[in-house]
Image (cartoon, rainbow over all chains, first blue to last red; front, side, top):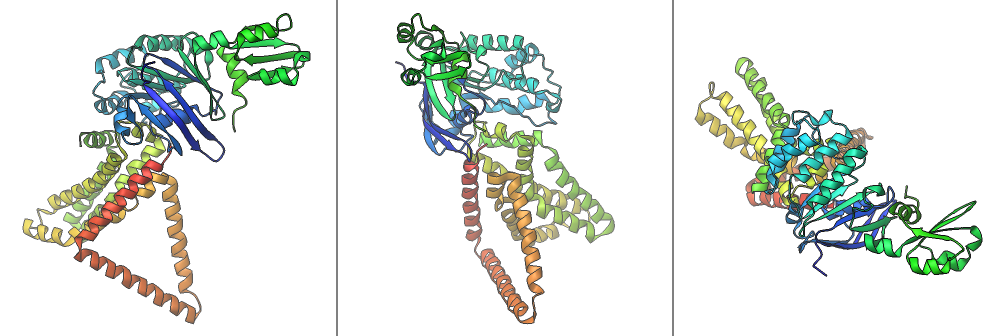
Length: 287
Length: 220
C-alpha cells in the first residue's frame, strides 16, 4: 500500500452538546473520498480540524508528511478548501476577492479562474453581497479549482446547487484526480457519491463508523428486508443497522454472503445503496 | 515576511475605510487646527491616540462578515496574523502622526515638530501597547463577545467605584485611600517603565505570545 496522502489519527473535539470522538482514517493519493453522515454528525468539525480551524482536544493530522501541529501554514498551502457556507467581504467585487486570494498560492492559475467564472455563470464585477448561497459556493469553487492542490476539501459543496450543476461539478472533480492528489467530499446527498467516490467514510454522532472502498461496500454490505417474525435477539445483534415498520424490517449487514445463506427463502437480500447505509447507520442527528 | 505583506494588502483592499476614516479624521482635525487653533489639533491627537484600535476593528469586522474562516484557512501562521494586527495598529498610528506633522508644517517649524514628537513618542508607544497590543488576546480569542464583556465589566467597575465613593464617611475615606494608593502604584509603574524601555519591549513580547495562544485556541 502506498503512503497515505492524508492521515487522521484519533481526532477528538469536545463541545457542550457534541463530541468528535477518536476519528481516524486515511486517504490514498488518486482517491475521491466521500464523507457521509446525517446533519450534525460532525462532518464540518472534522473537515475544519484538517485545516486547523478547530482547536483539537486530541489527535493528529498529517498531509504528505506535514504535521498540522507544527507546520500548519505549509499544510494549508497544499489544501484547497470550500466551506459549507462560504462568506466573503460583502462590499468587495469578485475580481478583488480573487486578487487578494490568489497571491497566497503560487499554483493559482488566473486564466483558469476566468474560464471557470464564465462556465459557472459568475460576473467578476459583481459584489459578494449580491450573490446567493449557491453563487457564493460556485465562486468558492472557482477559487479552489483554479489551483492544483494536493487535497481538495469540499464541505457539502452541492447543497444549494441545481442538479445539472451538481452533476457537472462531480464530473469536473473526478476529471481532476491524478496519482498525486485526492478529494475529500462531504455530503448528505448520497446520490452525488454513488458510483463516483472510490472510498466512503461514514460519520455518525461524532464517530467514524467505517471507512471503506466502494468496492468493499458493494461486495460485503447488503440490505435485508423481511417480516418482523424473523427478528430475534441473535438476528438483531448481527445487523449493523435496523429499521422496523409495522409491516416488516429493513436491516443492514456487513457480510452479504452470510446474510444470503442465512435468510434464503425468508427475506430479501439486496445490494445496499449509500442512502440505505446512511439511513440505517446514520441514526438520529444530535441536537 | 511575504505572507505578512500579502495579509496587509488583503486587509487594505477589503477594508480600506478602516484606514481612510481615522486618517480623514486626522486631516479634518488638522484643517480645523489651521483655521481655529488648538481644538482641531487636540482632536487630531485624540484620533491618533485611539488609532491602534483599528486592528481590533479589522478583526471584529472579519468576524461580523463571517470571513474569519477565510482568513484562517489561508496558508499563514497564527504568528503572522498577530503580526498583521500589530503592524496595522503601528502603521495607522505612524501614518496619523505623519499626516498631522505634514499639516502642521505651514504653522510650525520642522525643528519644533521634531521636538514635540520626541516629547509624545513615549505616550504613543504606550497607547500602542494599551490599545493595540494588550487587548489582542481578547479580540483574537473571544471577538465581539470579549469586547462586549470588557465594556460591561468596565461600566460595572466604574459604577461600583462611584458607589463606593458615596459610602458613609469612614468607609468612604478608607476606599479613597486605597484608590489613591492604587493610582500612585500605577504612576510609579508608568514612570519606572519609561525609565526602562526594556520593560515595554517585554510587555509587547508577552502580550504578543498571549495573542498567538489565544488565536490558536479559537475554534471556528
